[in-house]
Amino acid sequence: MNGLPRVRLVVVDDHPTFRIGMAALLAEIDGFEVVGEAATQEQAVQVVLDARPDVVIMDLDLGGGSGVEATREILRQAPGTGILVVTMSGDDRTVFTAMRAGARGYLLKGAEPADIERSIRAVTAGGVMLGPEVADVAVSYLTGARSATAGPFQELTDRERDVLELVARGYDNTAIAQALVLTPKTVRNYVYAVFTKLDVKDRASLVVKAREAGIGVDQGR
Image (tube, rainbow, N blue to C red):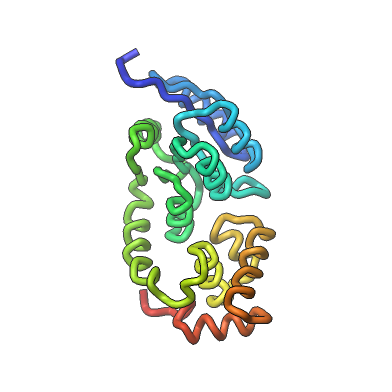
């Protein structure tokens, strides 16, 4: 031991090869202890509640489930848990969605072991760590999104606003689910909630209303 605090870890990924490899890598790092693994959204929540790790290594695409939703549920029931996303996608909306759900770190798969260790230690200490591939993306998206928070339709939640913007841009539910790392059923529920709150009867009317308010319209960003 080198005097660093011991860190208890759970690895969540639906690909066994990656999950097992990550767990083996982490187990070799001084001060790290892997106390659980999970392959699905539901397993992730249960394993974390049982093992009470310091940090969860979270993939976002969990087959039929969502690492974002797992993150939300974990932090609702165990708010002191640090979530470090390690996933394939580094596009702006995916990064922002994960961070807004409560993740405190975001790396792309393929990150160097030293970057993974550094990120875990930063998250354990209460910090935020973004990999170099996503840091600029996150800053750019957050800067552009800052002015949108005071926009129209204040009755919508942040997530409902995300869904509305993608509907207005012509995305179907499957594409929205992929962009926001949600299940299609969850997207359908959000779309229905937006219909109800904005008092529209169908998708076409919703698109018109959103675009009249400037949502989903390319403003040259």
